[in-house]
Image 1 (cartoon, rainbow, N blue to C red):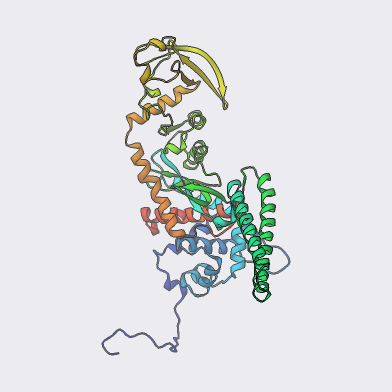
Image 2: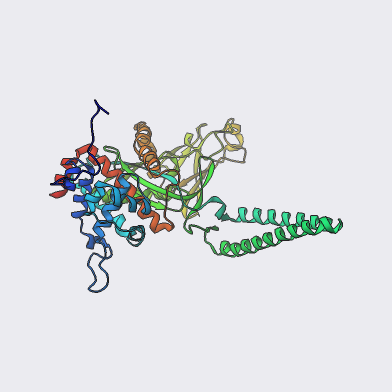
Length: 476
């Protein structure tokens, strides 16, 4: 092997062996993890085992296990078994832990037992970003995305799916019973083996029917009429025309550096009730008195937009077109102009739609307006197929009208939303792989998501500031 760079012989010993620190450069991200965890107040964050017991076998310090997990998620190693192997062979992890090698059960139990504290670590890093002045713009984009749970679709049941499965089993049982009757009429030499196989299948199907009947009882007791057998908190959700059993992860991303300032794991498929909650979390995390948020049509809900308005959060959410009037060639509600001084609407024909009465519908106080001249109006066919065109107005409709006016004056907001909040979701799903979550139940899944978000934010800040500058900022 002449004329090649030669390595050392495996059996060669050295008088002065290199230290582990020689293998970790000063710009290695593992040094950021080390300094960041050492500066945390683990007792205040609520980690278990920070203060050791006086008796019993000594345990690993929570800081060591937290460093292992942060390093693992930074390097797309989420499994506790894989982290156990990495601690035994990975030089960076040996440097980080001081050559400690906890077993996979210890590593997994740490994540399970400290889910709330791990979420606090993620929030603590966002606070650090705020102290470093990384949130100079007071605009965030909010969005949600569906992530797969460990629960298979076949082990999730809704009322319709359960009824369909039971009907299939009943049909199969009836078919096998018919085949069993036909087998009894055949020669004993061929009938007996066939009858035995059919009876075995019938017994299995009846056992499955009993299991489904037990699930039906649980389904009736469930508030949302869903039961997941592997992960009880996972729910069936629609995404891009297909179903997924998993969780709906909400994020608020700042538009300047695309850092995830707030996140929440929910098992509700809809985004309509999340706007004000995510906006308030983002405002608190960024340390701002006022905040602007932008979201897509899925977040439009009158009560949520009003809650944002009352919390000094300026919302930009386009209104979905749910009315069928425009699709059928008739006037939409936006062509009716409201006059606040007169408390009436004017229609395209110039007629006045005056206030008639108020009512409460789904907790909202609505005012009703219509004109008495609709029967003789030449535009009636373009307006309504009924006796008269009626317009409803919410008591806080002014808040929604101001928001739509803001959107009209800022058409770039939807483009800002798209380029800000969708990229982090794509990155996180790529890191997490096809399985997405590895843990079960909402607390464990929330801790796993927080570790992913923390890893994402760490990489973003290291890219923005540089490893050396971030280490100095963490140490001060």
